[in-house]
Length: 333
Ligand code: SAM
Image (cartoon, rainbow, N blue to C red; front, side, top):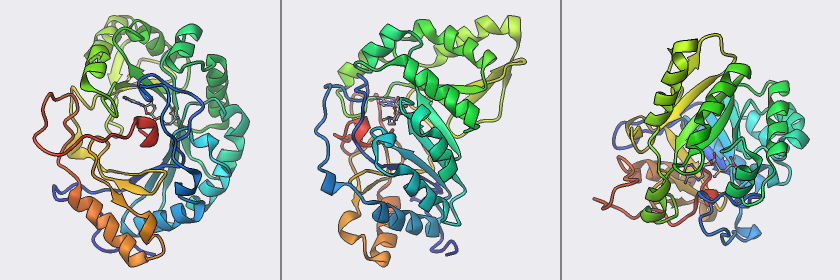
């Protein structure tokens, strides 16, 4: 299957080669910023895409130019037979890279099997290095399990190993220095991410939103002793590393430094909707047309057509559209 139909280019000239697939909306953790109410109504199992359906969709996407896949959730390691799904995606010629975003709790158990199946690399979410704070933010998660998951990922060489840290004003700004110094000792890429108002009111969000300029300030305080280099940009992240450090760090600031003009992502929800923008409610439903290749191709094109020019996260008023009502765990981040 060669690339066809002039690829996935939207009305603003952006080319899309990256599909993020949520394989379940269920999660073993309940992070405050991801599931603001503590519980979300999980999708009925029969509404979830099957492995065969996901593969059909990825094959159409690949035909149109998708090269990179990220498996996410909910917690993707809760999905039965995930290694088999990864193995099947790996067999699609056009797919060059398969990554996984996980909370890391089950990585020690399943990491080797996932690597064997063809997983290239992993992002692990971790917002605090303090056991009590970690337990609070995840609503009862166990920090030790995640740290063991990170060691497993390092030992398996699931590189680059990225650690996602959502920065929140009164929660973890005082840990930035510890996270930065961690990159000196370990071969990890810590990526600070701005807290986004997805699936929650702007007022809940604005209370804890912290622009990432503070990370640069803290890094500069360490830099005179160690030296700091600005590396090549990796996706939306501004990348840095300290001199002689084993790892690096990156800043992803969707709010204070909008990067919509370089957006190359499409999202597939666990219940089979193509989501062209993380923020807005616009989606294209694929479940009913799953057996019709022509209609699936058309659905990808439609997603390109309805993709808005930019999100308006953090704006008090919107010029267009409705923000999504899905919480982040039902989209995949
Ligand atoms: N369960 C997996 C995990 O924990 O990585 C994958 C799903 S989780 C929704 C994916 C990413 O979204 C995580 O790194 C999480 O920190 C991030 N995320 C969730 N809600 C967010 C928010 N409101 N703002 C910024 N990032 C958020």
